[in-house]
Image 1 (cartoon, helix red, strand yellow):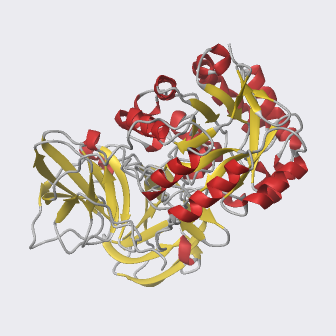
Image 2 (cartoon, helix red, strand yellow):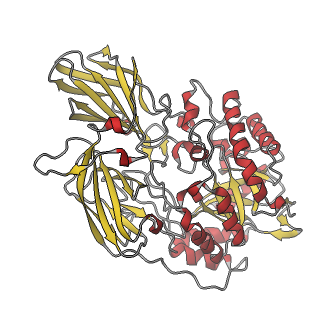
Image 3 (cartoon, helix red, strand yellow):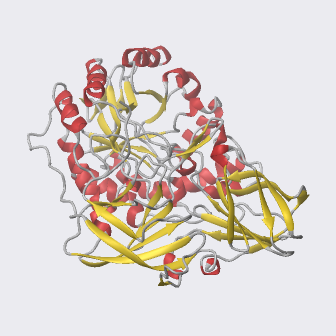
Length: 584
């Protein structure tokens, strides 16, 4: 069976030269019924390879559990890639970054006090060993050495930007080999981190978005021989809440792609198709200030969030055709879109009033973190009795990430990690009044030293400078809103505080569309039980992508969790997205 050979100045496969022309395509950001469509469009653009990460945290939601079903059926994805004639670059982590919650590391690792992620900490390496032991038996039949599409496996991800312990990389390489990986391994780093992040005997590759010549020169300095490869050629970027929508011109990106290919380098376009951070899966950055990533991962890629070719698709296809065969089949057009429609959300359920239906509380002297509660995503509701009436100042050492505060069910303020807020003053109407703090996990940090990102109320909590004890911590993963009891909305007595709103929409034929949340403030949306993701009026994006397979002919159920308030009871389904304003 063919094995990718890392020769003196090129890749060879089956004793023939191979220039890898790849594009990023993350199966976990795409509805599984759309995988085949996206892979076909990758081939038609001229790619001979696709790249995907593997998110450890989704495949292993709890210690000792491992999933490879539904939207996590990696083996099916690899089979579809092979059927399309595509090679695969597999990046199993354990750390993937990817603007993904925690960089793909499972949150339950952080239940261990003092654990050091991405290190030789025996607790961490034991968990990695268990993960690879669960993943790789299913993957091994898909390696090229066994007749499958996977030609190379990444060792770690931009480790040089995090640490410099070559012993840790040696441990990972030994684990991969012990679990049966016999295709070449590779590392990837930005130019300045190539020395720190590499391992002798493992192919180094470089990540860049511009300054191609300088980046390849830095790679050649660290690796005097071997094929040149850019494992992440950034042709767009991701967005954060409160920013503008990031874009890059097709002409500029195509010119740099031409420079890479003209230099004889192999390339992985990051991203070919970005997809969506469905549900609660987005990551965040924290370089002194916490910045959560938005739901869309459109990335201004050649295929947009709905899988339709954009300006970069044709521009890149033209460049690739100068260096490699491109299929003569015509460029695919956009998929059908749903006609605009409006759904009235006429039923309502209070989150605070029905919290017992969503999770069981744990009593302790101090608030418990999400990780202590065995929870990865969603919210935690903290409740306690206030000792006395009158003026009060609540102080919280750390809020991770956004806390809505209520006294006897009435909202009294919000504390945001992003704004470095720690204290709130309010009036307590009576002795024993109920203090409730609803904390949202807005995404774990996915890059840098702040990755040890536990969620909830961290550290000491005081009221009027005295430690507040006797807390009930209730995990609210929001994985099943159907546990709630909905009642008709009464405009004469609207709900105070966070509430779920539900309605129905009849359609004739399912098709891609976007839900617009005009008039709503902040929250989450489900369609037929499928978690689309977060919305926030601060933007930039104001619509959420609805994949056609989520919808059904006939009646469709829409559920919106609004954390604050809205000026409307309706949502609009549109045929076009709005990802926000761009820089002039």
